[in-house]
Amino acid sequence: MNDAYVSNSFRSTAEGDASLDTSLDEGWIGALSRLGRLVMVLHRLAGTAAAGDFQRLAFDALRVELPFDSGIWAMGVMNPGPTLHSLYAHRQPPEMMQAWQKLAQYDTVLAETLKRPGLTLRASADGPEYGAPFRSEVSEHAHRYGMEQVLATAYIDPLLGLVEGFSLYRADRLARFTEPERLLVQHALPHMVEAWRVARLRLVRHESPPATPAGRALGICDGKGLLHTAGPDFAALMRQEWSGWCGPTIPQQWLAGSQKPFLGRQIAASLRPINDLWLVQLRRRTPLDSLTRREIDVARRYGFGLNYQEIAAELHIAPATVRNHLSNIYGKLSINNKVELAKLFD
Image 1 (cartoon, rainbow, N blue to C red):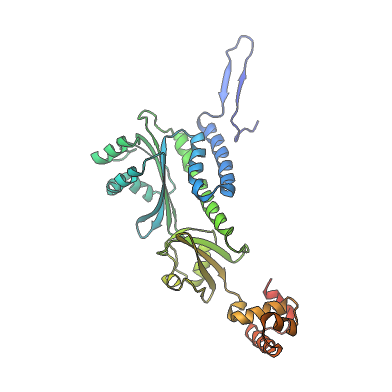
Image 2: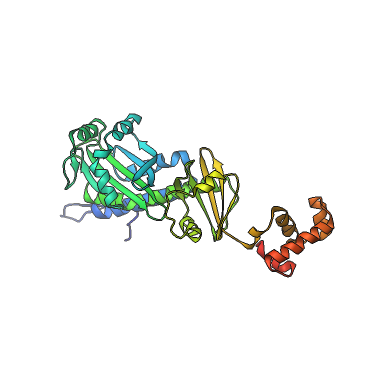
C-alpha cells in the first residue's frame, strides 16, 4: 500500500485482540503525507491565484497541514545585508511589524537564519533553541503578539541576491513544534517560494507578448532597480553581458533610459511599467538587432512573401526605397536571399 500522499486511517480487529488504529497523519510518515498534499495545492495556486491573494492562500493551505496561529513572509535583497522591500503578515496586526522594526537588531533568530539559509530553526518567546536568551524587550514583543513557539527560515538566492524570510507562530507556550513539523516546514517553504515566483511571472506574462522558452527571461524590479523576483534564466542572461553580475540590482542606466530598449553586446532588454513596479524583459541579441525600425518593417514583410510594390503600399514609401532598404538589410545581416531572411524571424 502506497499512501505517502493520502491521509488514511485503518482499523484492524481480530477476535480476542485489541483494535489497532494506525494513522498516516502521525509523526514522520504523516509529515510526508502532509507535504505531498500541500505541494499539490501550491502547484494549483501558482497557476490560478491572483497576485494579491497568493500568499494568504498559501499560508491557509499550510495551516491545513500544520497548526499555527500566525506567520510572516518577508521579501527583500541582500545589499549586502538584508533590506526588506515587501512583507505579508498572516493573522498579525500591522503594528506588530512597526514594533519589531525597533527591535530587529536584537533578533538573534533572524541573524541565525541568515547564517544558515534553508534550515528551519526552532525558537520560543524566550529565545532560539540552543541559543542565548532574548533580551527582555524582544521576549515582551513575542508574548504580546502570540509568538510563544516559533519556526523561522531564510532563503537566499545567491544568483539574484534575493532573500525571503518566513516565521510561523503558535500562541500556546506549551505547543512546541515537533521535529517532524520542523522538517515539514523546512521542505515545504522552498515550494512556496517557487510557487510564488511562478505566480507573479505568470501574471505579468498575461500582460506582455509571449516569450519563447529559449533565450528569454522576465523579472520584476522596483523604481530603484532592486529585483523582487525573476525567472530561472534571468541571472544566466545577465551574466552573458556582465560576467560578474549577481544581483540584486539591475544596471542604473536602464532606469535612466527606461523608455528606450537597452542593446548590449550579448543581450537586449526593455523595461515596462506595471503598477508601481517594472517588468524587465531580457533576450539574447540577434542579427536583427542591427537593423533600424524601418528596416525591420521592410525585412519582416519581404521575408513573409510580400513583393516590393506590396511593401511600398503598406508602408507608404516608394518601391525604389524598399529596394534600397533590402540592399542595406542583406549587407548588415550577411545574407543572400529571402529564405535566409525569413529564417531570422522564426
